[in-house]
Length: 168
Length: 186
Picture (spheres, each protein chain N blue to C red):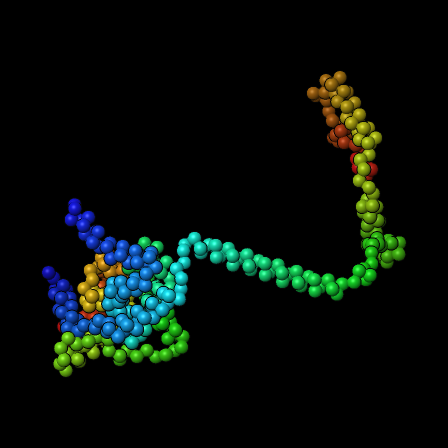
């Protein structure tokens, strides 16, 4: 046993000269009476009842919120008169009447493209396919493995001039 | 081997009795709880609060709370740890409410008693009480339970939900501080 343990023993001995009194019978009476009262006031909750009760509370809250929302929407509809509603239509601006603006021709082109229905131009597509087929045929006939690209490096597959109406 | 099993059964017997009473929803469980916990809990609460009066009030709150939430106690894995946790929470609530209300805590109220009615012992107890009040609360809890309730480190660790090493080190550090505080007495 080292010195520290001896000192601890002395200190423990010193501390044990005092004591903490036990609870008095009066205190026991007071506390057990209160506890019994609390016991009788609260019924025993069975474990399976707890989720059921939570579910019921959630359902009640949902019903309450929905009824509040219904009430408020009914209240709002009372103020609404159908006669006040007018059909409106978005009018495209007349470009001619607009004041001078930069890139005016470009804007006009964009507007015209936007107005055009998106229908595929079948004849233009057919022409393009036909042209591709013809080029391939020529290539096969001439043994085109070492043939140079004509027209100064530009591919023949590309149309000479792409017009906005070509494919759409 | 049989002796070990018997000991385990003996240890679990009060638990089983209490659980059975709780399961039957019998108010007799209050008496069982009192016999089992009141003494130790009151000591523990006095160690936390340094006041007998506050400790008694909190003990009442603890018993009422247990009676209300008895189904949880019946399902608790370790009854002792559960009860001590409630006691600790209630005491902490009281301490924090005191801090919020900025009520100066009176440490002059005596919660340690003398074994003999001698003046010199009364002075000693006052000094002991003052020294214990200066300790950090976790160290004070362990020292009080060990010295005044004769609990082992293992028992304290189970009650407070701590490891045995933590309890032992709290005790060691606490005793060291007490030695410094009571230097002239030891």
